[in-house]
Length: 334
Ligand code: MEV
Image 1 (cartoon, rainbow, N blue to C red):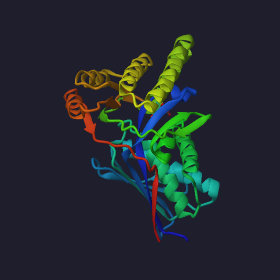
Image 2 (image 1 turned 90 degrees about the horizontal axis):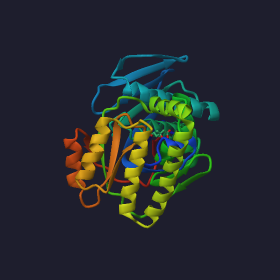
Image 3 (image 1 turned 30 degrees about the vertical axis):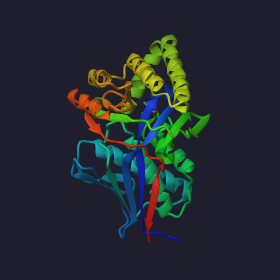
Image 4 (image 1 turned 135 degrees about the horizontal axis):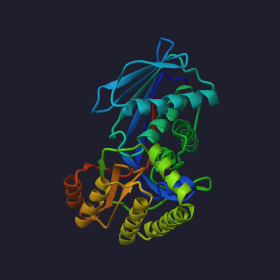
């Protein structure tokens, strides 16, 4: 049955272990969260492609794409227009592969997440846009297909990206990712009581990925060992998750943070939050994602409130999250 309007909601993602090393083929563990991005794709009567993006903090943007040219009024700080380029690329890749027409389409992006906080908003936009547009043009995709196409969207827009964020956002739950080899949804029933904080980012993920690459190029023998150690942490963390061992998970988060510091992707604001969270009783705390600002996660069973206060005192905003086990959700309206 053909539809005129589809909404897809894709969850944001916290990276539990293994970010950056996952770009070099090491494993990682990530968890989908119960806040995300909603993309609505609808048919219109004119022949242009319009992308509207809004969140709670800015007025939004409207981008009109006519004959390959992007025009329009951009009324934001750049973050929302960044998201629009992922949505546009998602529609382009789906239409190139399956033959949809991009004219007469309006895309509306709405975020429940602070954009640029390191919670995988770009992956969630890509996943939701791929899922919504494919449904609109009557193409049936599995969540794994959506994950694959969305990964190509991130690669096209950013140049480098692992499949971690797009796979986790698409499929949901707690995922173990070993690029090119294994993508496994963990069946852990363990509740992972995380306090999530964030600060403004100084750099984008792709800038930080490039910086790590440069460091690797300069000190290959040193950085290779750091990457290997992060990979070993992930495998230990998998065992700790299977044993519901919070103490080990916390210790491994702390070691992972040390190695992210070694890669140069933490900064004083993130490290400050990490130390304050640990002092308030968190079993472990680390940055989560690309770094350079963005998200921090603290494992805080039984002390969530105290740790949340510590994160705020250290200058972070706190987001209340839970796990999302559904992944991308699609609703259509005839
Ligand atoms: C970004 O969320 C995580 C990084 O590992 C980059 C990636 O996996 O593409 C830094």
